[in-house]
Length: 86
Image (cartoon, rainbow, N blue to C red; front, side, top):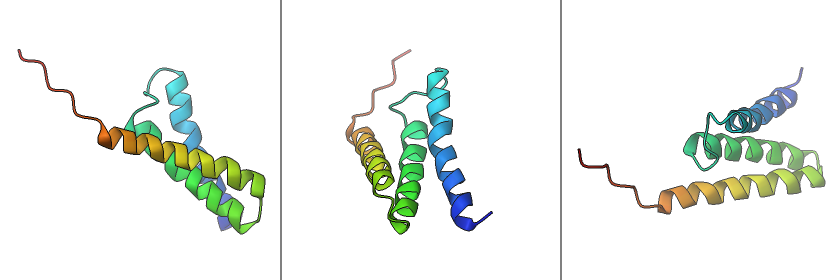
């Protein structure tokens, strides 16, 4: 198995694992543990597709990475909710 194949599997697992956890309601879709691996996995797959000139996958994974990045920036901009007073 080549390094490229291993990176493809790793990138796909970074996307699929939080997706599956979100479907089982174990992870929020607007959370760091969901968005960060999605962004990293899709950016990895986008870069690999770019190297092979697979333009459809570059578009798919590039947009996926940008949308995930947008979600991460939204989390950074969000004001923290104050802790309730006991």
